[in-house]
Every structure is written in C-alpha cells, then in structure tokens.
Length: 270
Image (cartoon, rainbow, N blue to C red; front, side, top):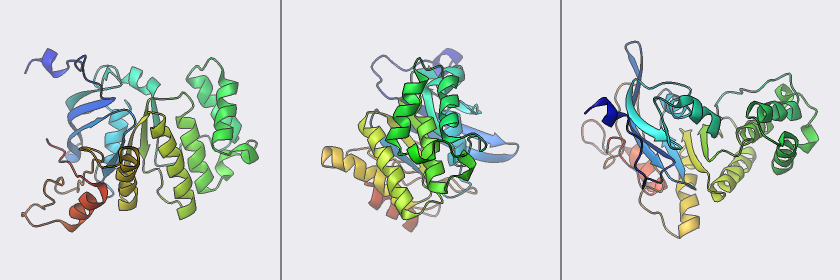
C-alpha cells in the first residue's frame, strides 16, 4: 500500500463522523492500544468497554487529536487523523476522566474562558444557554474546585459542549458518581445524541454499555447492526467479543454478558 493510499481521505459517500482502522500506540516496550477499528455515525452512542488500563483513554485521546497514533489510519469529522489533528481538536468535544478545569475560576468564568478559546461569536449567549441547560445557575459564582463530583462532571460536560461539537468523546463520564448523578449525566448524553451528535464513550461499567444499546432501541424499536460496539482489551492479551471466547476458545462470561446487554459485540479487528 502506498503512502497516498494509506492516508487517503474518506470517500465522498462515507457519512461516518468517525472511521478509523488499526490504530495502535506503544509507550516504550509496553503496548497501550493494539489495532483499534471503529466507525461512528451521527446520533449514535458507541461504548468502548474495557478494564482499567486497557487503552480506552489512549484511544479517545488519539481520536480527539491530542495524541498521535503509532500506526493506523482514519478520519474524524472529515479530517485526516494523522495530518489534521489541529482541525480535529477545534471541532471535537472532549471530556476527560479527571477534572480538567480551572479549580480557582468560578463556574461562569470556566464556561466563558472555554467559549473565548473556541472563538464563539456570541460567547455570553452560549454560556447563558449552557448554565440554564445544565441547571448551574445556583453555582455560577462558586469556584469550580468546590463543586461536588456530580456538579463538577456536569460543568465539564457543559464546557465540552460550549462550541456545539458534532462529536463528543467522553472518558468514563459517570465514573465515581452516585446513582442520581449518573442518571442526570446520562440524561444530558441522550439529549446530545437526540440532537444528532455522534458520541463515543469509554466505560468499564456494563450498566453504561447497556445504556448505549437502550438508546438505539428507543429510537428505532430494535437494536440494529452496530448499535453498540463493545471492546474488551486486557493489558496482557487483546481479545474482542467475536463469539464471546477467550484466548483458549472458552466462552468468556464478561464478554458474553456485554454482548447480551449491548445487543451486539463487534470484533475490533474486522
């Protein structure tokens, strides 16, 4: 395969918001991600399911244009993943697993700063709309570092949405939250999908994976092919849910359970 073919842009008829093949990343001798292939359409919620340390964060950082892959190819929002990372960063909404906002700035100041970074024509209107949408009005003058974990996660999600991105990359958006806060976060995620945003989220929680499939079922009355994509990757041996079998060909209960919850578990190397 020539270099031109390897880095070719997606065809004109390809409507996928994300389409990548064979993404891999190593840190020295340690493989962090091996051969990730996935596509995401508008309005889809795709779950990346795996244990801690399995490369989920690495995958999302690569798709956000924050980390270059060692090998692989693909396009995000029509931009080449290897050569147009800056364009991808400007258009993607990324929520990191760790709190990544300015703890000493107030809620409204964090939102205004993010709006100005993205160069919005009407930043005040955008910030006001997000404060109303996420119910942040009682906390606008409170320092972000003093928010509870649930409200802090909602503020992170609001900041990720400030420029109305067509693609959301969410790194374990409900990790560490109580059940009530998880429900609120998922309500906003489902609303974003209803507004035709493509969403790729990572999780190690099967209840989150279940929500991916249930969202598609609510929209179409059934779980279509590829409705939810689940990938288990362990540090010592990557294996995907092709038939739900482990390295020795024995049924893997974790993968079979994921397939049952999500409707379909698609192998990462197809």
